[in-house]
Amino acid sequence: MADKIAALECDLVEKDAIILDKDASIEKLTTDIEAIKFQNEQLRRLIFGSKRERFVSVMNAEQLTIEFEPKAAEIAQAIKAERELIRVAYERKKPKKEHQGRMALPAHLPVMETVIEPIENTTDMVCIGKEITEELDYTPAKLHINRIIRPKYISKEDQDCKQKQVIAKLDRPIPKCMASSALLSMIFTDKYIYHLPLYRILKRIIQMGVPLPSSTLDSWVKLGAEVLHPLYAVHRMHVFSEIYQMIDESPIKVQDKDKPGACHTGYMWVRYGALSKSVLFEYYKSRSSNGPIDDLLTLKGYVQTDGYAGYTYLASLQNITHLSCWAHARRYFEQALQNDQQRASHVMKLIQLLYAIEALARESAMSHEQRHALRLEKSLPIINEIGQYIHQQRSKVTPKSPIGKAFDYCANRWISLQNYLTHGMLEIDSNLVENSIRPLALGRKNYLFAGSHDAAKNIAMFYSFFATCTKNDIDPQKWLTYAINNVNKTEVSLLKNLLPQFIDKNLLK
Image (cartoon, rainbow, N blue to C red; front, side, top):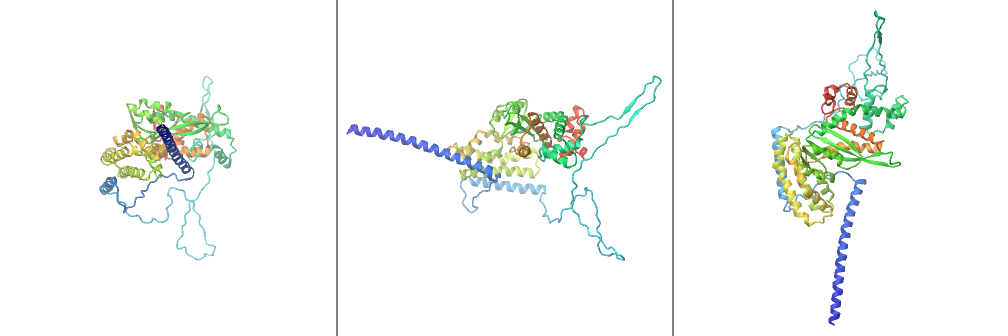
């Protein structure tokens, strides 16, 4: 009996071990299933759902608050009171607007008048007034020919039977090119601002009455880009000298002769110099940070990025202060709302307070020093509250769950998430550089790919110029026409003055 009991106990131990293994397997499978469900929901949202990340707390106002809410509510109330004080101090109260009626048409537009007389006989009648109706009309674009005539002059023979011939110098940005700078500007803005492929632009030109071969249009694009290469080099140099840069990257398909039947995936690396409002696109064949990030080794200043692993070693560089993006951190908690409503919504409410403080500083037109002081007074306690909460809750959730990944994302970047508090010129997130990438995303949907690696570099150049024009409220087509006309006759040391962030806007009127 003792032997049988011992054998049964051994069987029980073995079965307990098998049960424990099964439980571990079930737990792992459950975790994997939850992760797959989360990924599936994110993919479905990406394809079918809204891209908005707006967060509205579902907490009932009459419900009793839990332990961590009084502090957040107290901070929110303090921010609200501070906002009112600043509004009173700056007298920024806006009067209630009355409806202005129908929009007045701009006075600078040319006016074509048409008088319509009544069909009745008005003989012996006196005109007592006029009814005036205005409508906004459109004249289709037209091509015309600039015929440049240069008279030739020759002097009389001198005593040595020699004659002197003179003719005015032909000053054109692209010699022997049929297209004017204004036409080239129209082509480039149509392609890189309105995202029209070249074949659609060609159709428009043909509809205007010029049967232009596609090869000619391609050569115009190539020649026009070559003229601007020196200006792009100067632009790159000035963006690289900025002490505060935001960096992001985005893919682009490129035709490669070494990959017949398939496109190469290259990357546009984008920098935004927030102080001068300068945008720089650079094309690289891969996402490797060896090229674009190596250029930062000589930089002394601040670099703000998203959570891409290629940026992680920036924090170890002595001359660089690395900033992470609170918008990306918030996105992880927004995605975790369905997984853990309580924890995710709590952190999101605190992040909302951080952005409320930024809105307060922006609306009050605070200087860098004022914004820095406001952040230390109001934002720092909230960030400490977030850090304490993450430290307390991180060990209570599954690391691979959406809320666990959100906690890990913040914990692994906690210092860089706080670094925006060190100076008032720094931003809480890198949304400004992400907004600059949007034209590239729209363009990819229309022209699909770049024709070659050189063409991708030209795309980067034009997106750099046009994005900088947008940031500085400059008409891109007027600026490009002026730049093409003047780039060749401007000294190298003065090319900076042609860039959109430095140009005298009066020259573009």
